[in-house]
Image 1 (cartoon, rainbow, N blue to C red):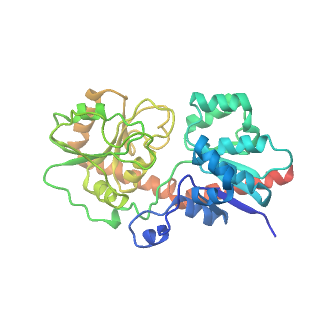
Image 2: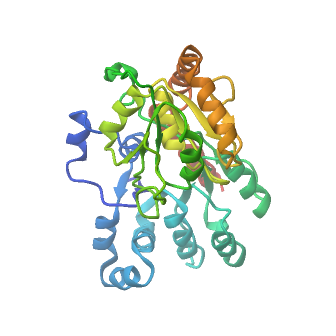
Image 3: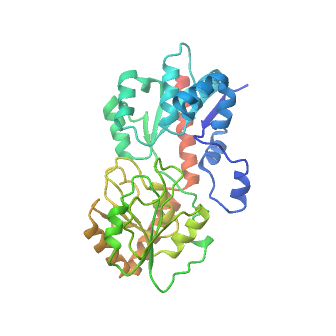
Length: 360
């Protein structure tokens, strides 16, 4: 009997998720598509707690559910051919468990969001757990370069993949646009957003601005951290189903970012592009792998409301140009950055890693 492949899910998988997808209420889940591509078993918090038992209960109190998930992977390691961790929050503790356990171990692939933070670099520098990570899969080329240079790793161990969106759910063909008499633009998400700059930029523009300030991945409280919200700005939560309509009804998407070194905002950027919308994005080190200036969007310097205001006005005055940029964004999604290609790409990375492991 062949050994299994396990894919972690940092959360609890909803019991009715497949019904939600089939009914069109939400996009396809990336982990379900990856599990199909890998022929993998999914291991979420609930399953991990069952496997981890009493030790897991203690670990969760001390270090949180992601360490329990890593511990559960370690407990079942002997039955696994490969383990794919869905982020460093699980992958790093698992690598530590594997490194300091004698004997053979399964092939370990870790998806990377941001490893350049001081606590994470110190963990890798001091413990050397990178030796228990066979492949780093980064969404940001900046992160890819950082990992290779910091820990002197070959390019075949530090792979880059563009992030993705469910191009079938987020599609202009799935909704009817209902642009009102007053033009509308939108901004979406919370993680490392610079909404203060956006609010200052749009305060004197005759445009409706809708900020969807909620995110399942954000670590801080939902909302916009200011009481100075102009009269032309609406801030509220949206479901993914409602977000699709928001994109459809907007002329374009604005992505104001802090000076980050990872792919903050990438989900919303790809969703907007999939809906055929241009993107005005802050030019920061981590967010340079999706927007191509003049082709599918515009870049502006971070933290500069005057330049952002000028660019918003310019694109509002030339909606044909906005539509051209948006159409090119949709083509990028269809050709490179969609969920199906992402699943195929990661399945190939896993196959190559497992075969390389066998050769050694």
